[in-house]
Image (tube, helix red, strand yellow):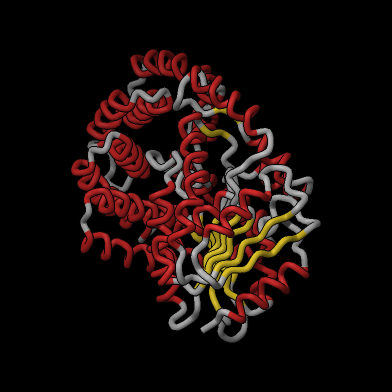
Length: 471
């Protein structure tokens, strides 16, 4: 119980020391495997990745005497693949990821919804490995599997959302289902075991969700990219409104945000990987919506990613919408000092930025509550991640010159308290395409499309622009 409390309070060194004592006094095989894995988890959280890998290997060896379908083996291989990705041991990771796919698939054939989601993430981890190994054919086969599993899971999610009424409630309902399945699978016998399971539980969710037109065919498809700290569910209200207007809307989680935070080895921000993901998702959406125009829409950080994507593969989409993509922030010096101070404490040690960013992004209390309370929110980031984010946003303006033929719509709110409109104007000027439009909303804050309230005037203008660019 003490080690569980220490884990919850992020005192991983003390938790590891007490777990070592527990290990010496535990005879039950399955409990020993659990304890060894948790010691590995402590080392992982302390960034001692080599040590973490040793304990995961030891736990897998011990688990060989357990039932081959034991869910604990699934968690062990998920952790092992994750740390191998961090250490860039791709050959080992590929072998283990294939084993992970086998275990997850076997469980999904007889298990619940969480096991089906585990299959998806096993294939996604395998895809990350193939991408780093430059295995094109293997990755193409993996993406076909992802498409198949993702489609069935999105349909299951849509049913839960329809039953619960909104995206926030459906996410909580799915998490409740997953927690129930997790506890049932691991059969805790004591209060301490219950506490451990609850504290280490990481609910899996989908990195791609959608709000599709219910009747008839969509006019076009919009793929959305969220802002810093947010996730794909933040487009819920926008997605519902646009689907009523005849557009199918989808939204991804950027690498290191949202659902990726529950997967070891994928918790840190990766902008290049996010752009690669966008390309793969566009291919996926083209299969689901043949011959339909596809537009990218990104807000804030997502706006920068959308512009980068348009610069790299703008010929594969019909247009790009970038909302408040400015790299010039209010109170930039103060935030810079904060990052620098935390960098001295540890460049890879996350600290809380959520309150600072959220409160300047919106005054909408409902949005603030959903943002800060969501299990998918990324409220902590490391100095290294924040520096990477700042560099990415500041260098995006140069890449805008490479947007030569893709139609572009840039959106800026004049009541934005997080970023300066001048940065958005610079990006607009840098776009080479002659087909570019600037929409300025004098009443809008930073969050325009990721808000629980949507401006009819803004949506009317957006729809008009989209319909004028449907080919």
